[in-house]
Image (cartoon, rainbow, N blue to C red):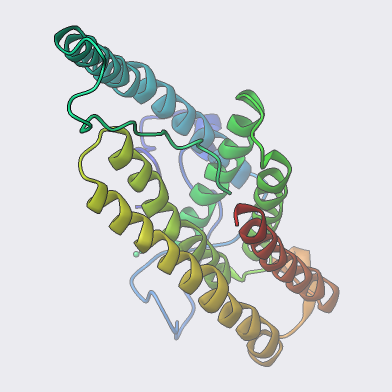
Length: 271
């Protein structure tokens, strides 16, 4: 699947908004994804990025208004009712010293079907995050998060047009993996499932952050530095879809290192 929906019934001017636009013949001896279609890159792919941003924005607001906010209102109303009921039953507001006061997190912290489609979808996700970051109330780490997102978007775009798709997809896996556990830990704490479950999930976040963003990410940097010049010839030939020149590679490496430095700075600020 290399399209969001079936394109057969759409007019031609809408097709770039729901599918990849530059199919190309499959190499004779592909070293990976032998059963997947292959594509070139081009500016029309930005139309697909725009569609993904719109879908993510609609899904986010739909779930927020239809699911999460009603659930939060129900949860807070129930907790307020139970607290008032307890205070009415015990005049001094204490239940033999067993009523605990729990704080709330501050909210701050810092084929395949086709690798090409996956990379465009993830790029759209980070564009969407930039829009959300600027639409909502400023956070303490606003500058760090904006810088992180801008560098990540640049890396995704550079890897896409330079045919470094594997590096781009790997960056996305490493960036997103630990982000599963931190929001999950916050949700567990908000709905008061279990303090042990909250602590265990947060522990998974700390371990995954260290492993993905400070160990495996360094392997990606070293591999891009050592293997890219060895396996891919530097050639600037836009008419053939080749944009990986030595200056492009140096810029890409610089952005990778800058992202790692930014992650270390975020660690220091969170401490």
